[in-house]
Amino acid sequence: MTRSMVVGNWKMNGDKAQAGALISGAITSQAETEAVDIVLCPPFVLIQQVISGCSGSKVAVGGQNLNLNTSGAHTGEISGSMLSDQGCRYVIVGHSERRSLYGDTDTIVGKKAALADSFGLRPIICVGETQFERERGATNSVVERQVQTIFDEAGPGIFPNAILAYEPVWAIGTGQTATPDQAQEVHGLIRKLIKQYSSSLAENTLLLYGGSVKADNARDLFVMGDIDGGLIGGASLNPDDFREICRATQV
Ligand code: PGA
Image (cartoon, rainbow, N blue to C red; front, side, top):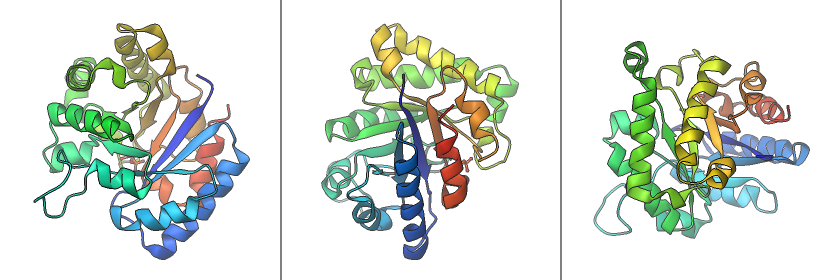
């Protein structure tokens, strides 16, 4: 794997002015760090602004979620075909906040990933254990179950178009990052799970780490063999920090 990827997950943050600053920052980062693919995932209402702002650059845009249906009576929801129609190329699926607050089960996540793929979107599928599960020594079994359900629902052929993001729930927004060794251990496991189906699928699938990645810890994480980049929440809202994180992929 030679290319890396850094995804900015803005969550429910940002307005037009802030989006403008983040777009310029991402375009600068993309220009100075050729070997990284940068993806911005703004809230739905800012997607059009980000897509037009990034046109002509290599920065790509993604949604943060998609509905399981294509259209119809689903007030407040957005479908994969709508994201694709707007010019998105990616969509985050199964973020732990969607899993814990909005009822996205493993099965729903697998189905959403398949649906995203069918609309020509690259799903960025999140997996990861809670603090309770880690303390019980269940990290590997939880991640295995989550990844297995993706294989069952979407088929291994969804990779390498799909991207997997390991995001330990206890590290998201807490400032408590997984150590590079902890993260590498789970990334190695995920790579092995994909390898059951094919070595080339496993080698070509991007595995991102997410959970309190900051400008000052990104390099230590990205240097690990199976970590191909990051899914960045809080630090993606600061153009300087995001730029440093993009630079840190060049290790
Ligand atoms: P964080 O969020 O970087 O703020 O921990 C990561 C994520 O939720 O994707």
